[in-house]
Image 1 (spheres, rainbow, N blue to C red):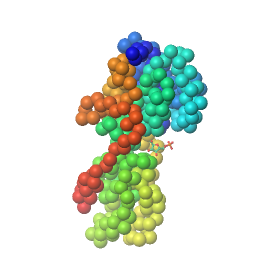
Image 2: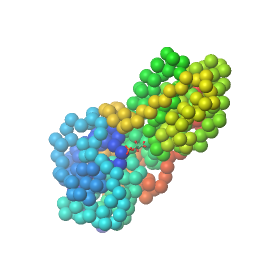
Image 3: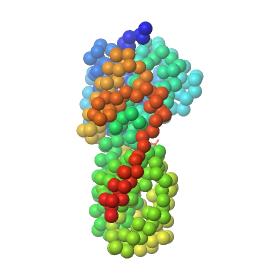
Image 4: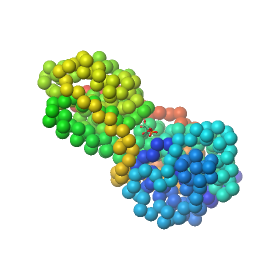
Length: 327
Ligand code: F6P
C-alpha cells in the first residue's frame, strides 16, 4: 500500500520563469490547507544536496504572487546527475520525514525527478515552469505568456524606430532548443520572417523574399529569430544580409534575459496557481510521479517518464500563417 504523504518539499529548478512565485504560493497554501507540513528547498537540487531546506508557513509566501524570479532561488545542478549526489539529497529529505516532492522547472529538472523517483520512495510531481514552452503534455508552461508579452512590447518599440528610419531589424529572442517565443512574439508583432530551431532555416529563401520586398520598396522589415536557430544567431544573419542586400539598413537587437524577468502576466499567475494546487492534490490522491499540465483548459497528467521524452511539435501551418500575413 502507498504511504500517506504528510510532509512535502517544494523547489524551483533550472532557468527561472515569471510565475514561479505564484506557484510556490499555491503549493504552500494548498499543502497547509490539507494540514501538511511544507518545506522550501533553496536552489533546487543543489539545496537538496546541501541541506538548504526550511519549513514554510502561510506568511512566508505573502506578497509574492506578483513578483518575478523565485523566492526559493534556482540552479542547474550537475551533482544531482550522479548517484552519490542523489543519495545525499534523499537523506536530507528523509531525516525531516519529507515524503512528497514538487519540482517546478523544465525538462532538465524533470529528468532529475524521474531518476530520483525510480531510485527512492519519495513520489515526485513536476510542474512545467519555463519561458520556452518546450514541454509536451501541457498547452502552456509557467512564464511563457509573460516572456512573449515582454518580447512583444520590446519588438513594438523597435518597430517604431525601424519605421522612422526605414530599417530592417533582426531581433533575437530566447529559446535555445525551442521556437515558441519567437513564433508567438513574431506573429504578434507582424514579423516578416520567423526563424526557429524546429525548422531548418533556408537562408536563400529568406534573402530572396527580402530582395523582393526591397524591390517593392518595403523597407521596414522585422525578422524574429530564436537564439537556437540553426543558421547561427542574429549577428551572423545580419552580416549575410548586409553583404547580399546592401540596399537594406540593417540593425540587430538581442532581447536576452529581460524575457525571463518581470511581473508575471495574469495568465501565468492563473496557470501557476492551478498547477500548484493540483500538484498537491496529486500527492494526496496517490497520483504519483506525474507532470501536472493544462490541456484544453483542463488539468492533464503526464507520467514523468513520458514528460522527459516527448517534445512539442510545431506544425507547418504556423509557418504558412507567418508567410501569408507578412506579404
Ligand atoms: O530555458 C530558458 C532559457 O531562458 C532559454 O531560453 C535560454 O537559452 C537559457 O534559458 C539561458 O540560460 P542561462 O540563463 O543559464 O544563460
